[in-house]
Image 1 (cartoon, rainbow over the protein chains, first blue to last red):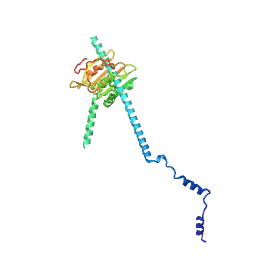
Image 2: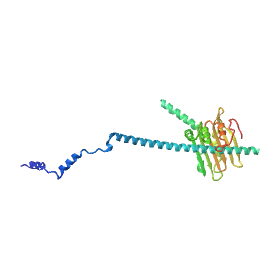
Image 3: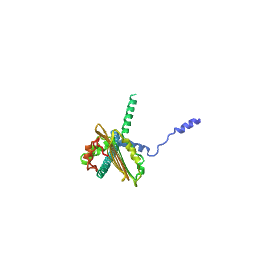
Image 4: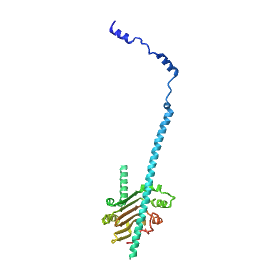
Length: 104
Length: 176
């Protein structure tokens, strides 16, 4: 016998399965296929993606409007402040003119 | 080539718009103990207009007043002691409104009290297109610059609101 034949015989020799292997295979076969995950359902996947996009878009729109509102309120306050200062300075000019007129 | 013409035209318009604005001394704020700097270009006025209530009388009047304005600039400085600003500071502003289309319609100066009060209007074809107020006291200096068509009636209507007194801002009236 050559050494090669010995090695082949050794490699291809019958091996007994571990104890209980056959019963485990049969039990698995009776249980049917493994249940699919709920997320794997394509319409649900699309719905989830669309919801995520809608939530992000909504958040961005809300943030933009919030900033716009804050800027608008600030601009409004500035206008009212500017008009208030304008008013008080017009009053100042008026008083100075009156003072000057009364001195004449 | 058309875009170059477009860009050039835009730059010219921007330069023209900038040329209408008065330059105020830049370093006054650093010398002042308190300062108010309100700069409201046209787009900010439009934005503010959207937030001014049409139902509250004061805000409705303000909304109407700013509707056609191009800009409002207010620079107000308060100093802790007299002599913190110089005549040159005022003169640098005054020099920009000397001559057409600007006219000084009201002016009062008290050297004794160190007070100056002046109103200039920019008028074109009997339409007031700008207003400059210079109010100087020993420890206070204020410049108010309003750009755009101002209806004297509207300012008169604001009388009593925002502390605005009745003033005759008719172009051509001069009082020194």
